[in-house]
Image (cartoon, rainbow, N blue to C red; front, side, top):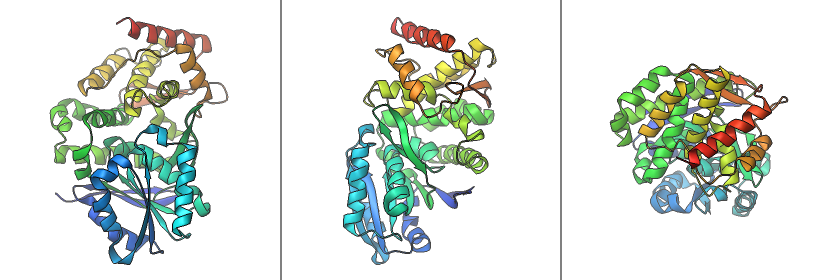
Length: 368
């Protein structure tokens, strides 16, 4: 199976995405072409290191390159100021210069932190994304958003910093736990819901093949998601307009994650719940075609994703949403589906309506 390639062009840089089995074998040639220094700093987490760290390290050391590394604890709680500081210090102590390159090997947590480390250490060095989860492949590794969480909310500190390349080795997905694989489908479904009704239909028809990670269908779906995101990021790199549609479902999701202190739902699971809420709210306010929420909910549930959550305080979720960086000058910014494949972004959701619907949403789910 040959590699698929998607080219991303933004004001912050141009770079290729390579998708397919054994794609990681491209790393030595990419480093030779893109990096001026002989030093590479690998950032990964303990779980990914156990499965893939040795093989990737061998690739990175080819052609005489000097390798150093930071291994983060696995889990969302590693996306913190403490671990970022440790990563900065590891880079400096290892002798990284401004020509060095960081390689992020892992899921979205690793990619976000590694990208922010690359954007900030020595005032900015190059990095390459090597995502190992489905969610990171279709979303987090593409587009240049980097950052860490604060106790007050998700991704509240970060920078836009485009990678030099993204290498998506589908073989890495073989070691992905089933729950994390399913969480990744939330971002795939989100991409289809906001931008591509044909992809939405493909996800419905090919569900069994995709859930068993059949290489051909999976590669095609990942490539389509990357092309959609590349097109959006090309038109709006820094989220001043069109790129906001990529936040569909994330407003409530980030509130849930913050309230659960990043120890409850996985990010994709929270986005799944958030998309259902946004779709229902959109129908209530007349922004969305009737039945849109049901179509979305059915597809999410078909991929084994949650569409509700229990034990979460509506009041605390509302507080967390009010702190989220996606709020606008008139209030919380919402992305609604006018229909599958089309969106509307607005800040004009009355606070009393939002508060009422959040309370109804969580109380109804609690009583099911």
